Image (tube, rainbow, N blue to C red; front, side, top):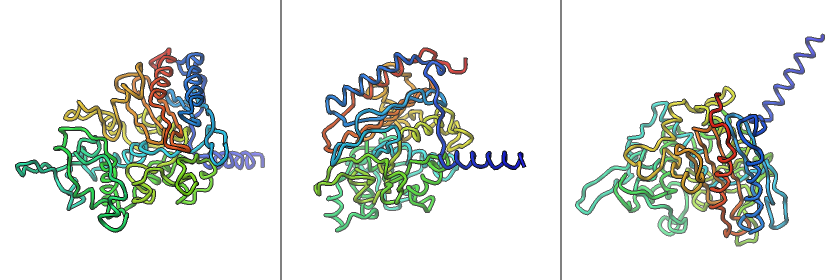
Length: 406
């Protein structure tokens, strides 16, 4: 009988852990080779930003190896229509950080499974996708790698009103047709233009190859595989009630209401209905910490693998032919100059999002810095570009033991 009750207890504990999703365990900074007093200087930076009203609030999370060594909430998650205090489990609109944690991680799975090659032409998957054509009529086809490194020559963005005017609607098919035929700004690999249209194109390639929507594919093969409980596309549209109560609102709209659980980005919201390659993912700090830990560990965390080690290495490496532009496959290596501060290693990669989030990952020191802020609430007037860099420098300065294996 005693053994029976022990077995039942273990099963209940296992069920509870599963229900709670995958979480990184916490550790003191000192146990992970960091100085807690130095690390606490993050507070000064974030509190000043809130006092200066550049942001209403934020959550900062620092990962070292496979442990969270710092997790803190600041200010408020909402100030309109009522004030709501920020909590560490607040769920944020990741904006363009969706490009890396949603689209890129999903797309790299296609590459490592042999379903897509980086040098594949886009028109293999989207037949009427037009090449770049110079003044002499010479054509250069756009490839997958050009999209992933923002060197394709596609424009940065298009307002949904342009799609509406041309096609009479704003559905995904009309948006893709516009991208397929719009003017290319330069010959692929000869220039750099950060473009949401690149990742909407990648989304459509993935959907052709898999037969699934990006939001469904990423949910099943990335977020659920890692056991992430609070990461999904457009929680309001998917009726994710357990997430909705934690979501921070973004910008106040013309009707006086703030967007809540719907993606802030107009293309993703109006043309994609939340399913978009450039934006749409919502998440919180602890879920993103799991993703960072997996990438620091060659694509696997807690026995749950989303990518192979060589895939992760390739993803965070700037391709030789576009080295001067500093973009890896879906990520940014130039973050070291403006988001990752002055002290993290040159191999650091990361991404930022329009609504305020940023992710910085240093594979040399096995450190990640996650800042989730709500810059566009209630109005699109805030900013924290300098704070991202200074927080990263404080984190780097708190590292007193670089090699965790010793």
